[in-house]
Length: 277
Image (cartoon, rainbow, N blue to C red; front, side, top):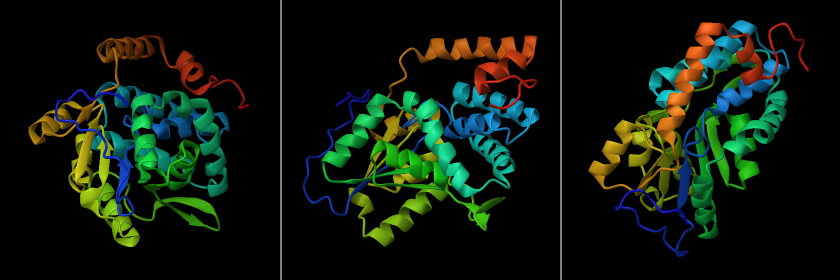
């Protein structure tokens, strides 16, 4: 099992009375490196489901998401872009996209240490759930491919199996994640005091505080300070993160200076002039 970077960490308890226990994992920058919605956008762009202008916006947002970590403004901006992209798309197509992006993008970006924690919970007899702002259809694919119990994701309204571009409820973020977990616990007879939660973002403090065993994974600066003050375990799998940050800054500057054309090929697999595959 990976060693935590905080001396406060304790090993995951061995199997005991685990019927009422579960572990909840955030996805972006916790279970995987980067933004899962970006993976969906990349695939949709290759299918010619949205415009070059939207591609540019998404590329820039992904750069800054990776550089800074998740903020409320980032996730709301990504939400608005994502809803405009999925409007008019059949939900079944989104499930197909979820399968494809898991293979081509997400699987190679899963943090091995976080996956090991999830697998240890499963071996200990606990349920393991993903809790994410990603659309439910994509979140379900991720949970299935990782062999987890299930997922809680953002539900986009569908009429006759087609996305309308509106949300059924608000985006699953911040306090909404905590509320979704509380509802699941009530419906499944889970004891939240016996449950675990893992996240990288200070926006998920409500989720972390809703369970008996909160854990910070690859935390942003605010969450790291908060976790240390609360004596929570902290796991950080971002080896060489400072070098990576400066590398991304240089790449962003290059894109601004020389234009986005090469960026399309690098980020989305084709240039604006190329027909979709």
